Amino acid sequence: MKLSIVMPAFNERRTIREIVAKVLAVPLAGIEKELLIIDDGSSDGTRDIIKELDGQNGIRAIFQPRNMGKGAAVARGFLEATGDVLLIQDADMEYDPNEYSVLLRPILAGEADVVYGSRFLGTTNGHRVLYFWHSVGNKLLTLISNAFTDLNLTDMESCYKALTRDVAKRLDLRSQRFGIEPEITCKVSRLGVRIYEVPVSYYGRTYLEGKKIGFKDAIQALTTIIRYAWWNPK
Image (cartoon, rainbow, N blue to C red; front, side, top):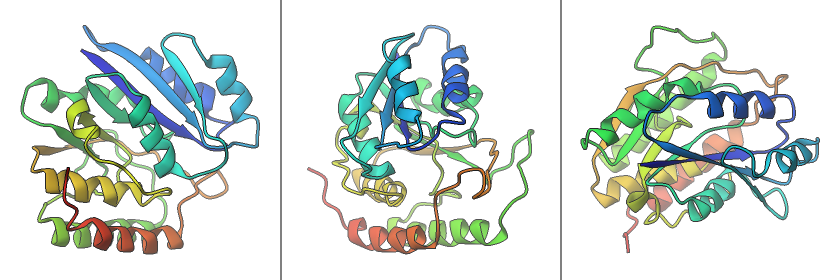
């Protein structure tokens, strides 16, 4: 089996080398890995680092012509990926690649087509204590998403999503920014595929450390849920 790790990156000079090293070091017996890093018009030197990494250890560098948003970068990565399973990995250090085996297990066991990594199911590693209203917003958006999709997810906004190639190629992703999370959720619910959720660790960062998502993205998530709740798959 081949795993395609899709990593959107925008101005992540401080973390890009470390997260790439962690991804490459993940032991996955019998699984080939490719890492697609999609630079989203970075202006802080991230682009130069990605150019340097291109071609090493299964790394493929892809460069957006300008800053187009995380959603556009993920969609580009999905189009370029060649693996049997696609997995989204942010370029910061908030999610731990060592948990890939947890995400992949339901797919490898033939039990799931899509797996979400939930920050709210509990883990042995705990989580960093940060913004109260962010956690409230995440849970509220998940509740609204569940009401429209008739799913019972606990963490719709999670970065960690693993999808079989067949599912990923049918999504026709359109969201440019962080609306990508509810768009994927609405669309996989409409496909009628098997969706699992597994617990993952979360090492959140502050805005001073580079966090980018904000209130306007929550509003966009709401409009995205409404836009794609009745999406008809091709």
